[in-house]
Length: 441
Image 1: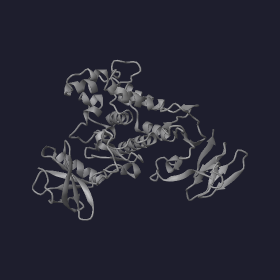
Image 2: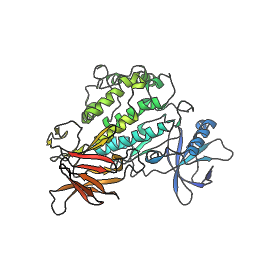
Image 3: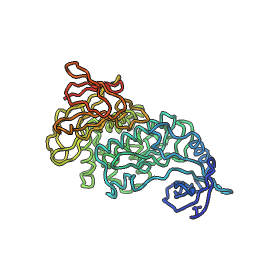
């Protein structure tokens, strides 16, 4: 039964008295309302009769008591705040934070040109944050079960994300879910009813979501789907479960994109993807379709998008944003084909590898460059600046509270105090809180 405007409800644990303000929307499981406790506004998801089961109620109660994953990665989940019960009625719901829908967009709104599309570096940040948060969720022992574009919102400008509809999250391989997910995003083995959702099947859904974000198309919608006249459940089972074939499979061309102008955008956006990103997508939708153990992990996606974002560079001719990848000796703008000169690079050395940051006039160094999993990962600790007395001289300003140590190519050393800048000298080595970085051509 729908809730009436003006009706008051009580939260179970926090004992909030909440008043219904208006209905915000409706989905398959229930309705969402704007509510207030007199001081602050929240969102309330109210389940339909058939979804208001004791099992679902206990699942929400568990999520409320357990809380979201720790750190900045967990803060991106719009986690249930409290259970909302209705006296003498079976129906119930849960309270959650209210989303600023003016700032945050859904992918469908961007694809319909209702909200601006993110730049390539913002898209890298969006993708990084998605992988980072699902990695944290999985490490906490949970599986999401319903990863899809419908449960994601993002700020097109900054790349900050929010993950919504977290009421179907459960303990991996233990708790039961009332839903199996959105069919377009389900792993083939879930579509075939061979297994329940798990962190392993989440990896497939995550890959589909990332592909949709980058290519604006489904990875399995090619000739096979194009020739289907009735898009019903049996047809979807064939495409997503019984005979899934990647549209850009390098060897199996049976499901390549049709020769139809409606598919031009997918082709164009695929070509915008750097080769390393294409390689991960190809693995996810060839080997990963049939061998869950070979799916791309959240950590692999996270590392890739972290590196891709730091290769962002603007074309001097048309100002289109491009992505450079380590090892590329030259780069031509994807939009106007102008040759882009590769600037110097700041190369961070870690015990398990390295990370390269292009030094452009927009470059910022973050806490995550020296401490990847820090709760202050998004804090800016350094920035490329021009010398105010000589604009031709560039440097990296120390924005931390501690001095950096700079070692010049001739072996001399200098302390870079807070708010001072290290010069752009090729071969200069910086020690930033114990992490070594070197400026290279």
